[in-house]
Image (cartoon, rainbow, N blue to C red; front, side):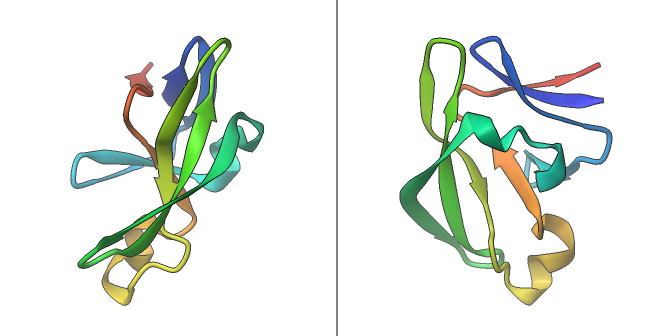
Length: 96
């Protein structure tokens, strides 16, 4: 099992993660979506497409733009990141 943990809260827990360019992507169904708040931030990857971001809520803190997903990834990345969310910027990825 791999977990994404922020400020004492497990925000994702899965045995079906994918690592792409050093980032661990969790299936959306394995993410505690009630711990995420949609951000207005976006970015663009030349081969994955447009990323949208989420703020991650912990027990006593918020990590701004610490989760992201590719809602409509470009064809080359679809099988890798479609339907998945990755975490960074203060969210710890822990393997059991």
